Image 1 (cartoon, rainbow, N blue to C red):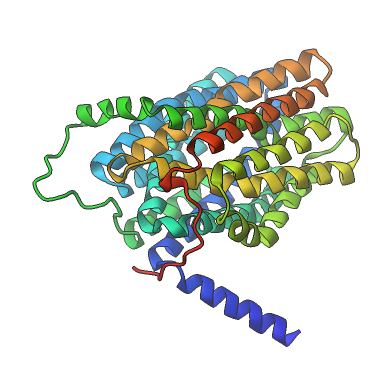
Image 2: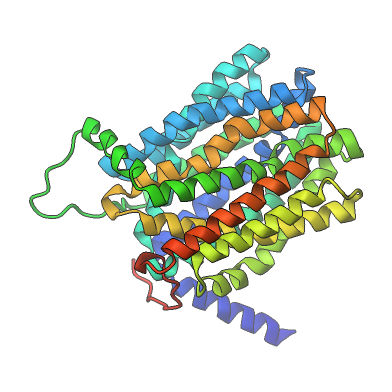
Length: 422
């Protein structure tokens, strides 16, 4: 037993030393902010359907309203990250997100909730592209797959802590969930302000700084990068399916299988525990393999796992389905982040990350409401049959990209290890 602890400690020290300190500070802030997010997000559909006595269709429209605002917030945030640096939009997003959480928890009108959702989605998405660009700035290319994998582990650790705390607080008052998330956002903002340095690459000598209008116009170049847009479109289709695990699945399990909030939180912990134990190992396996091929493999696990929801019943089999999906998630998430960074020139990194974030934003706009239409009007299992078909289409798309883009140098897999630098 002592040798196991000794080996684990040695491995942790080695891993820590392989990455710069700035990266670990970002990891720490991601953990704190993630705890707050996982306390609110997976329970939001339950909160809306219970408080306002509406169906999943209405809850889906409200979730979609967040993401409509996020479309604009992400575009603004990406341009800000390239024009003014990464740190400012991150701070801006954290502080204003805290305010919007307080308003969401205290609003008593559904129409007011829609207004807050639109504004909150806008300001909450400003920080996303800057955060992704900051990680790409800090880490050398060969360390990015492992770096994004570490962020996945930390993110899933929050899925054990956040929902567990949320299940207790929700039994007292849903308002406490929103207030706690707001408080944690403020804590993260303080840490970012005092302990994280600006990471935007230095401009070359003689470089003429662009105006904000010119920076926004730079999105034209991103949109003309057709291979990148093809990758983003496939990711959007896959994201529509993946997002169901955190939106409509909770309502589906409650209404069709009698699984309550606490049991749903336990199922989500199944996914989190899987990532915590296996993400490091998985990342080290996939980083030496063709990334687009790995995307196709991950999407295959998605297709199987989500389709199974329509065929099985009982906590054990639902947990198994989530386990299958999580295997795909461990492959897809760090790989997709690495691919996006590979597409992006350093001076366009924020804007590429903003367009790439559409893979999450657009599914959040349309996915929950479309799922609500199926759950409220048709055989609920149809949602999962369609999910399996959609992800099967993305498998083909990613494989075609592997054939056409896999030989490009920026997507070449690498197992090299670079020393950590501050």
